[in-house]
Amino acid sequence: MNSTLSYNLRGLFGNEVFLYISKRVLQGLITLLLASALSFTIIQLAPGNYIDTLRQNPQISPETLEQLSQQFGLDKPAYQQYFRWLWSIIRYGDFGQSFVYQRSVASLLWERMANTLLLAIISLVINWAIALPLGIVAALKQNTKLDQSLRVLSYIGQGFPSFITALALLFFAQSVSPLLPVGDMTSIYFSDLTLVGKILDIGWHMILPVLALSITGFAGLQRLTRGQFLDVLRQDYIRTARAKGLPENRVIYVHALRNAINPLITLLGFEFATLLSGSFITEFFFNWPGLGRLILSAVQSQDLYLIMASLMMGAVMLIIGNLIADLMLKFADPRIRLEDLK
Image (cartoon, rainbow, N blue to C red; front, side, top):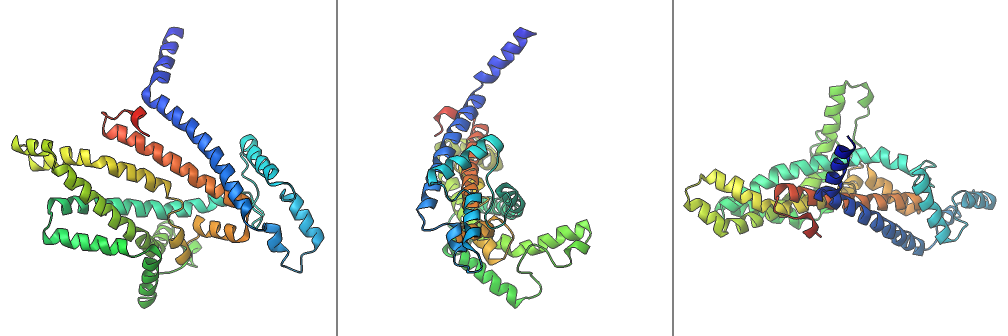
C-alpha cells in the first residue's frame, strides 16, 4: 500500500500540469506581493487621506478625528500601515475595515461581486455566442456583401467608446419608456414577486446594461475571429485537406477552427481577468449596484483598504485568467508544452 501511495505521489508531483500550476501559483503570490506594495505606495502619494476629507465637516470634533485616525491606523507611518494590513490578510484573511461603510471590506466586495459577475458573464457569453459564428461566416464569405456588411457593423461597434454607447442606449430607453427600465437591478415591487418573476425582473433590468457591454466587445471579437480564420484558411494543410476530398464542414470546423482557436482562447483568458472591472462605465451609467460604483465611491472618499482590496482582486483575476487560458491552450492543442508558455 505504501509503495502504491508513493507511486501515486510521484506521478502527481511529476505531472506537467501540476508542476506548471504550482509554479504559476508561486509566481502569482510574488506578483501579488509586489503589486500590493506598489499600489499602496501610489495611493499614499495622493495628497491627504480619509481623515483629511472629514476635517472639512465642521460638525466633527478634533477629538473624534483623532480617535478615527487611531482606529484605522492612519496615525502611523505608511510602511507600518502596509505591513499591518498585509499581516492581517496573511494571519486572519482580513482585508481591513471600510472607513466609509464601517464594515469589513471582504463582505462589501462579496456583496457587490455577484451583481457585477452576473452582468459580465452574461455579456461575455452573448459576445462569444454571436461573434464567433459571424466571424467564421465573414471569413468564409470574404469580400461578399455579407462580409462587407459585417465589417461595417464591427467598425461601427468599435468606433463608439463605451460611454457613448451607454448614453445612446439611455436616450433610446427614454424614448421607449417605460418599456425598458433604467436604474438599479430590480423593480420596487421585487419582493412581492414569485421566484420566476424575480428572475424575469432582473433579466428585464439587465437588457440595456448587457447591450452596452456587448456591443464593443462583440465588434472586436468578430473582427479578430474573421482575421484569424482567414489566416488559417490560406495555409497549405487546408488546401491539402480539400484536395483529398474531405467534406467542407470537416475542413472548416475540425482542421481550420482547431488551429484558429488558440489566439481566441488567449483573448478569453484576458476577458476573464476583466470580468470584475470591465463593466465599470456601464454600472455607473445604468446605476447598477455592482463593484464599479463601490470602487468609484472608495476612490473619491480615499477609503484606503477598500481600494487596496479591489486592486488586489483585479490582480488575482488577471493571474487566474492567464492560467486558465494557458491550460485551455494545452487542452485544445496537446502539441503545446506548458513550459514554453510565457
